[in-house]
Length: 195
Image 1: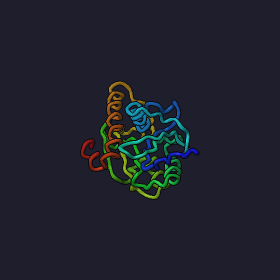
Image 2: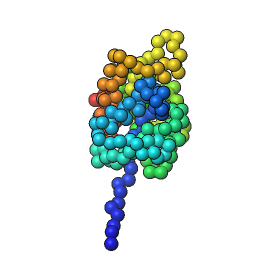
Image 3: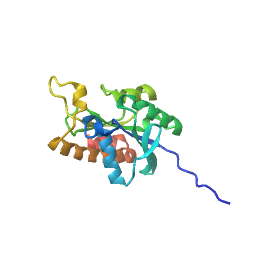
Image 4: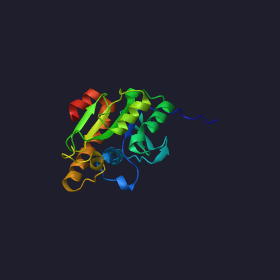
């Protein structure tokens, strides 16, 4: 007789925000996806299984089973994928960690928060609307503040090159470490170390 080993329940969702497709690769709005790529390299995982309208992977972080997600809807519809996975695994809102860009922060600056408003970010706004509130932790990575008179949509969809691309590569590497820190040691420890 064979017995199936009981699987550990998913305790965390780690949601990396971006827009799918090659057109958006390297843009400021895809800094969340870039962080996912850095996390994959550091931790030997592949976020490539299509579930919940997202590319996903399961891994263990600090003894906790986590579902990593890159929603494959466009940014302003990210909440649907997150809500679907959270409902399926019964993950509480305070265990949904969202990684996104932030145009109110200087390029490459990290800001970790235990909760908060969308701050004008459409992906966060949709997650708040569909998951029932602002009470989820987030890691925001500065996408640079738009120059005076620059259209916000054009700014977030602009590709970073040269020194900006180098600075963001270093920032997403730190953000990938911050994901682990937050889940292993809590939001206060992650804020003290990375903010």
